[in-house]
Image (tube, rainbow, N blue to C red; front, side, top):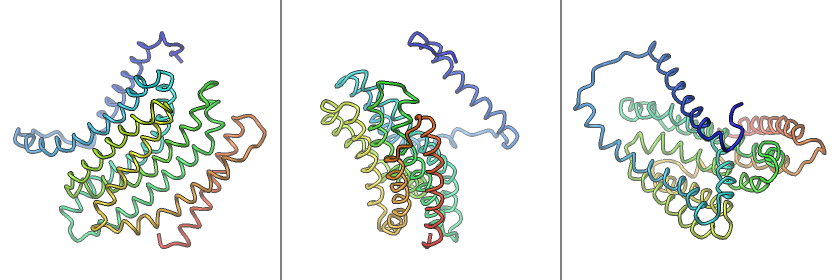
Length: 307
């Protein structure tokens, strides 16, 4: 309503800040009914500093290489390429927010099981969570890819056509993110395997930076997008390799393939279809068809497999 031009930068900043403040205040008003405040001793805080600092390392690594994508684009390409990449990358956050929420909810639960409920089979929770994460990621990422040709002109306007290709490169990251998020939040961190987690993230960051150095000067935002995709695939692969002797990774991958195939089939059908109507109408039709295709396919997978 209020941000109309580049002169609205200060107003935009205020809106974003106020929104964050209101969000947090609302949360505190709600949780007051459900928690009791207790006095915490200094020793109770100090003993958690080391493990928090250890987990801070991968957060810095991830933030660094995600931030460096845009910094390197700005210095090695131009600000226009930064805009294309930034706007396309935001779309990934739609599926990843749901996937991350699953990990946030399950992490303390899995930690409790590993340390206090030895008789409970934690692997069944991890396996079910993995399938749920794959359903979320494949349905949303391939669904958004299916309507990218119509969505980009409607949402961004003219001149953003390159974002269609960026969508097709960046959105498959969600599949790797889903797999690695479940392994990370429901096995590595709850089991105290911080070194494996840190190693995977650092390797991913190095791979991302190397590909950026090669790809950005020649291909701009497309090079950065490939760097992000390969980095996420690398992180996912490193985590899977590290736990392959402790978890049935091969079985997980084989049982995730039907969801990926279903999403890919939905994308292949819808992306090539043209109903010769306006973009908005095409988006509406494709969304409905995509939901129908995915639900029917999902019903078949769940009924004809052992999942």
